[in-house]
Image (cartoon, rainbow, N blue to C red; front, side, top):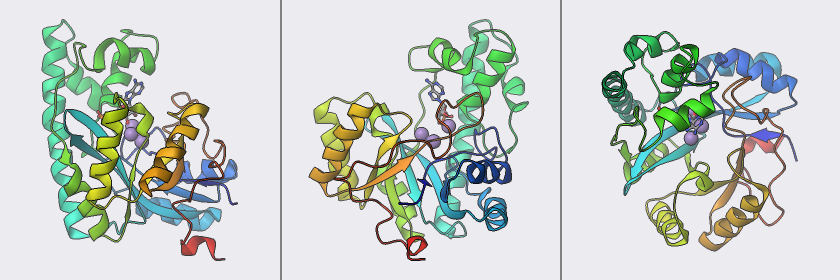
Length: 281
Ligand code: AMP
Ligand code: MN
Ligand code: MN
Ligand code: MN
């Protein structure tokens, strides 16, 4: 089985490497098939494709869409999408506008708790002016000495219940899956183990996801423990969902799992790439 990594980020969203640098690093790590899946933006795919041709990596066009499902934020990865598709592009642009509006509310919330200047501060870490994320706030807060690293700054300031967290409504599940499918792509629930759902909640999410045309879930992810690989392999089998593998790499120093280094899918899984032309050669 080729080394395949179907979840990664560049500076077009909240990664630390440019699309070309990311692809070069993936090649050096032995990744043969890579999906670039920036949050809510497909603007890095052209550069990544060019680099992939140079490096001999097979690039899968991807995106990671922010979704609100019930009271939860859920991420849906789209694989083998067409980045030029109109409805997909228009939808992502609405989500990005929502991010800019949310960023202002985050900055106001932090200011009210005695942390001024975080909007400008976060933008200093943004490479793509169209896309601002909590990760950029995190990098600003770390640089200002509010916490020792991005992980602890999230825990202290940026998650639900903390000073810099504000509620936000993202795209609807059905809408996001619809854009992915309309553009020819496959919809994948990203890192299902990260959502604070009990068993009933996970069943409800996967049933709704299936219902609206979702096709796969990430089974092997840097967000999962080995017991969760087995757990989500079982969920995939029970719901007739395909399985994906992705590091969710964000860059050196911030991601502790390197590109292409996770274990293979459990043998019981049907891989999301089982019928992809990328694998016929
Ligand atoms: P956003 O989509 O702007 O709300 O930001 C979400 C991103 O923040 C995720 O994709 C991760 O890259 C990062 N993130 C979320 N939670 C954490 C955490 N606890 N520790 C480190 N990074 C996190
Ligand atoms: Mn991220
Ligand atoms: Mn995610
Ligand atoms: Mn991700």
